[in-house]
Length: 301
Image (cartoon, rainbow, N blue to C red; front, top):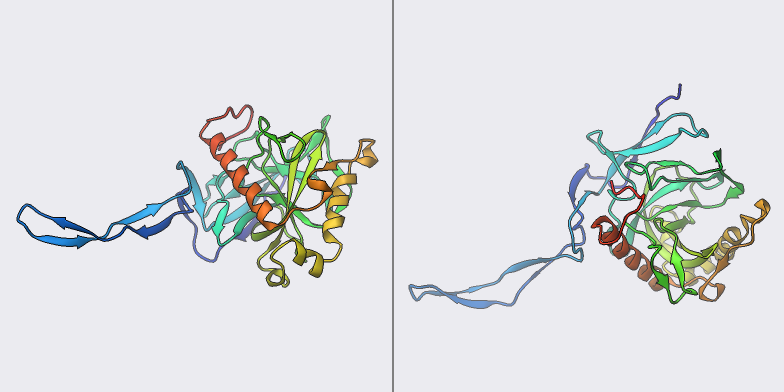
């Protein structure tokens, strides 16, 4: 019988609390205007307006402090890693952890720790979307060699399989959250929630589907202050962008499959382009959870 292990992962120092998905709210004051009453008295009035970039509301954990709960034995078909909040309630790493933290910083959930080979991923079709090991024909999947970076997803993003990207050979989205390759020095844990800043984007095309790879670094990495865009990565992590591209290009070859391709001239795009992709896929996720598009077999909680 599998043991249950509890590991705390703090994405913020403050206590856990819940709020709506309107976490990108910005307040501003309208210009002063003169208001007069029926008694003839007048006064100047300024109105505080709260503006949100979100066209909808939903529940999300703000400044999340969550625990990971292992159910079952690792490297078995039944193994799952769930996230739960401070009250013990299960939460979805895909839907309930907010994407934006402001100032170009985003949350990132680790699925695969660096220097490991088990192909872990969020179960997008299961309630609370736990992290599990991927399978093929009923067997657990492993990469043919270790991945050299922490790998996972950006919450509240979705690559729409009905949308053809005209900038990347008309490829359609892969129906998953956006992937992140975190290049920091520390090996992270499955389900850990990190604060990262994007640095570059690679447009991988996997069997005709567009599968973005956002290259990012955790804010607590010793070199985080040195890298802010794609050129900084090459300067302070020489060869890393090429190594990431080549790793994802070739990892299926040992299984007899063709190499993956890359759009955008086979080169990493800069930070601004990465932010554009994050924004677009966040909007696609918003349409998904509002059911403006059909979720199909995807779990929305």
